[in-house]
Length: 514
Image (cartoon, rainbow, N blue to C red; front, side):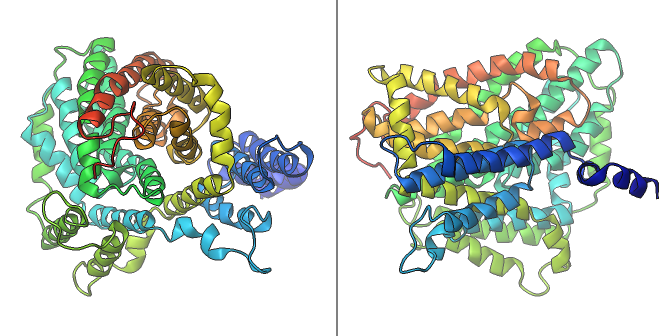
């Protein structure tokens, strides 16, 4: 009754604010974001003059991009609803021309029918069943037990191994961070409350839940949703990258964890800090799980078979068993997963643990990148960016674009939203600069993943921040150096590695190696 009275006394605004607060969001941020998003949409659509060189369709897509960005940043709408609203606005604004009075449904919903989306959904469902079976917990505790995690260094390296393995099963970095949070908290709770031990807790949480999840996410194609957006853009340009090809291209990024590990442990002064009874406690938690169930073995077998099919598709360096695209294999995997009697779970149990909002976000983001290309908006924005970097050497172009990316990312939460806007622009910019479009897009967009300045830039960091182990200041002081490490790593390690594999960023005419 008290709540009802408060809502009534506050009028409509108080009623809305109260309801938003009950959802765990900031009413001021949400309401301002919602109103600002629609105001900017209207201004771009009907008030602002259209820049020379930008088509009417491109202007409409720009309005939608700005609207979606504000909604994603402010969280005024659930991310999935913003995602599914992108094709809706494309239809209503005629940003994609209608055909004989009929809306282009196939085109505007192409982001929800592409192969990478179904590949992602299969991975989501594997992750859901894995959580129901508690296989994720078994893997984490098993690895920590094997590495005899008794000090801070061993714990962090153990969780890095966990992240690599879970990256194959759980596709979103935020989902992996959420999965590991209770286990990481269980380990840090074994430490005391001295200044040194509190610093050690910060190092463990930041490295394990943020840096580890993001670095491993870049390595596995299905482990990080921005990967799938880039793969879709490349594929539509006739440059298909297979599951193994992606892993081969990206695996050197795993080495970046060595550098961030060195810096974080140095920064938080964790050398020599032991976790009293740490290994014994972890070993007990692991043993308490008992032997692996038949369901766990079954899931591993199913995943192993599907993973082999991923690896043996068209152009496989191992053996070409079939020519199906990855999304088709994902659909086959879903069909197999729900064979009657294979697992003892109701559909609703799996459904409740499947990240449907992120699935819709991915589809909307892919649709938006396609619309930016079709409408000429990506090329227009690439022409604008061209002036910043024209005449520069390839490494200076990379440095400028990487630094600009991190400046832009200060106010954005979603990696997916950022790459949905950034990737098509960079891909269109590369030929204008005489650079390899795939290599440039990978290098610039990968550095976006390592936006480590504020916890609000990455959902995994928001989850880690929720552990109340570190402050925003702690995170920023450690993070700015790691951003510089990521930029240097991209230019000095990854660019030469791509060249070795046939994708020199400095040569736009290099033949497609895959």
